[in-house]
Length: 362
Image (tube, rainbow, N blue to C red; front, side, top):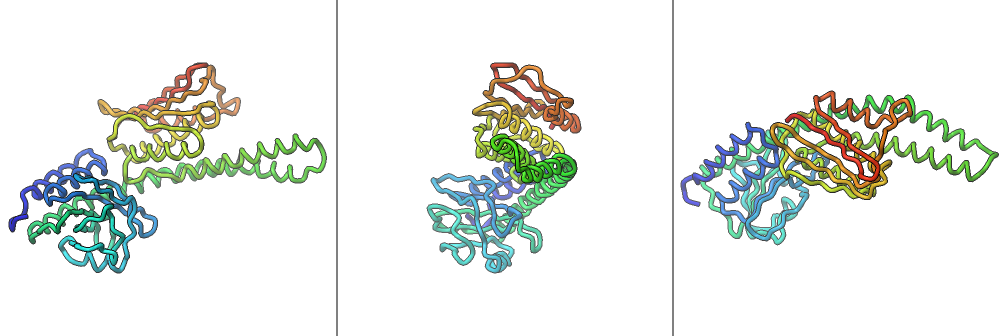
């Protein structure tokens, strides 16, 4: 790099600032800024890591590379070394393995790497790490521009964390309401039934065992549902949250595939919470009632609307029992959708599976 600040970096700041105030997701903002920084500094790879909010670990949110280099998914940074390393105004440039600061982030290890911390005051929001064959020459002007670029990325991360906190608050409010209803009703009834079963001394043993197993299963289902309500969309946006949802249900025995647009628009926190709860309920129905081996989530955005569709390969159904018969799942899904002005359509017939379509305004 010449003694004058790279015009590419100046342009990167402008483009990142415009992206920050537009309707892009944090992964899109990060990917764009990393590409700008990588090209301007001649880096082989650049990665953004953000605080997971759980201990000292940082999780990789975005990465861009022009060489066959892999960035670690998680990093643990020594706190004291970190404070020493980020004390100056310029990015930290390393020409060794940097074991005193953190485990080397790249494989194979880069000969030289750049560390640009992102944060406000003593608060660490994340870090941008770049790798290259040699240490890039960064003059004072370029260092200042890089810090500004880091500040913009930090602002994007802080805004995303605020949205995540709003989502967590909305979900916690919903979770507490449902938890109270379940605790005051079904959970207490099940606990009482299990105690009564333990007192039984006569009767058919096989029948008693089947009843005990059924009640235990129902009790476990309630606990699983309540735990499932704790999960919130992370900083990666709705697309990443959907991917995590698929992974969670796949681990429970139903193969779930996510298809559609790689980039989804930002949605309001309460809308994101409702979308994930509706899809979770739909997948739970697949798991418990559909007799399906697999399911697909289609996620597409067009003309100001976000379409989320869950379809399965189960046997399907005809008329659906309603609340009077003790079946509340579809009713709750529709009520949740109505709260945020979304449209929910359930289509099924014997022999052709079930399709649950949620349409949201973005």
